[in-house]
Length: 436
Image 1 (spheres, helix red, strand yellow):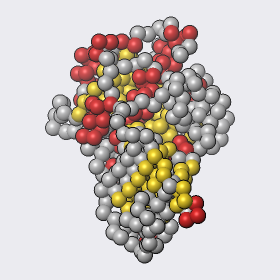
Image 2 (cartoon, rainbow, N blue to C red):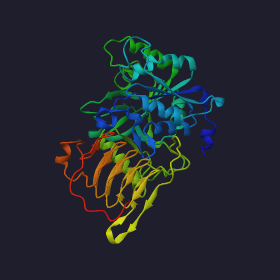
Image 3 (tube, rainbow, N blue to C red):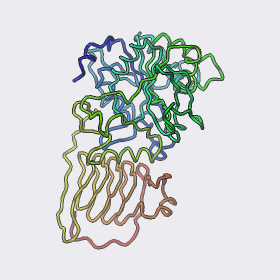
Image 4 (tube, rainbow, N blue to C red):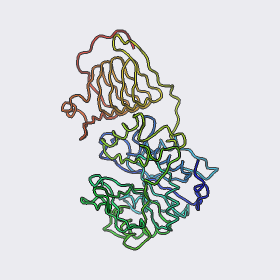
């Protein structure tokens, strides 16, 4: 339950509008975004990436949400329409807004332009504050705590931030602050980001989550739209412009955020991952399967929410140990509808309706929906997109040079098999004992 302080927070949730930026192309995710937007990529077996930020908002009591979409948005819009139905009687909604060319013939030019082109939504809702959050990171956050600090500072803008290594910081916006947490400079993806004073090797990185005073946001968007030299991006343009104008811009320290049900001193404290690359995405999935996961899906006080389905429970069959034919899963997430039929999986994440056939081995893999692993197959450190059937005897992840000739292989050696890929038969297969 929320704390006593939050129950008496000095704001009305009905006066807060949330806009989730979910139009990202996600090119660095390779084949995973060949047919879908980055926030629509499956995560954790039964979720989509977008479910994480939406769950944070709904769990925080913020239920007036607009999701801005653009790139290959069909599956994302379908998922939200079918999975996220809030009560209109309580003025709650989650609605998608596709790019509409309302201000000209161009699509969204940047994150700020996406909000500018949908500014009519803000004016229609007339909120006091606007939360603008990204739709493609993995973290848990009670947004009310950030709102309280934003209001306490009487801020025009509050930016959520987290310390990262200097090497990592080159991929993020980096913030310089004074002793009171006020932003004095903002550097977007620079080669030599400034370090945190007194903490060599660490930089204060923007999480891409913002809370704006509504009037200041609208004024800034108009000014940015009139600047033809602008990239129309919040990190590159809006935040630096507001800082240079002397607006009251503050940092919110994400590490101070306390989520109900989470151990504030444990591995889950202030966990945040940018999953913009195949390797980062894969590692975030592997974080889920440890004994004490860094990102805990089992906290009933702060659930990650999504739609429901009618798939049956997962099934594990065959215990013929003499012939190494045992349906077993260790350190893995196995979704509804899966059948582990005499094969073995270890440290893997399986989405719904996957089948692992006899004598096969799946180790450190992520399988999307409807993946079938044939007999005697050996798959290691791979991501297999939906509706793929791997024939008997297939080997993936054991000879990366051979894999590179056929599939996408990341810098970290993760093999990605694209959606509905046709995989040819390979190798000689021992005769079956009997039918699966």
